Image 1: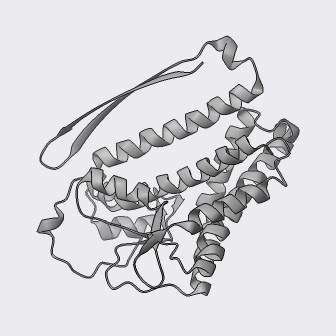
Image 2: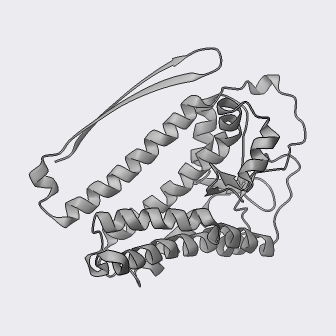
Length: 280
């Protein structure tokens, strides 16, 4: 039996939040080794918890901004192509000011850029390596050949998910696949906004709508993945993969929201120089 305890204590100062998270997990070693199924479940939970901790940390370091003190002005449409030099950042737009919808061809171009980016290959290698480490698909085997199967399957998840959720369904349903940064308000409100974008998105005609593209796109990708995951074809595995893919997108939204703040906070270089460096 897995037990987890999370204590969150938050105190506000003038322009930042400090969040302390204490997490403890009690899992008897004999239970962890009892079956490969428990090992897989533990690994997936660990990934999700790690992502949650990372997201909360980002929220805590983001400086709070008062929206009422900011005058509306056209946003700078320049965006760096990578976050931390590796995570793809093609779909981020600074704001909804003077909104212009994308054509269908532009949506497919975004999906292509995301899918063929070096960061996508790196993340596929990371998830593939974790899958091999936990032996989540025994039929893939071990060694270099086994890693190749894990890597190819992980990359297929990203590739199919990107095209389905960023191009195919957005074109059919007339939804915008981009992330529109909020940029103003408290760190907590921006954090909540970023997470909510996996549930709500911009329509091509204006206004917001449930993000059908996100959920239908990733659900389709999970269904297709049954063809190359022979050991994970149960309903439980499908739900787990769907939640993981949507969780990765939610984590990416938080990074996109706070990326300019992180650049300003951790470097003395001007923002334009940092953005130019991240563009490489």
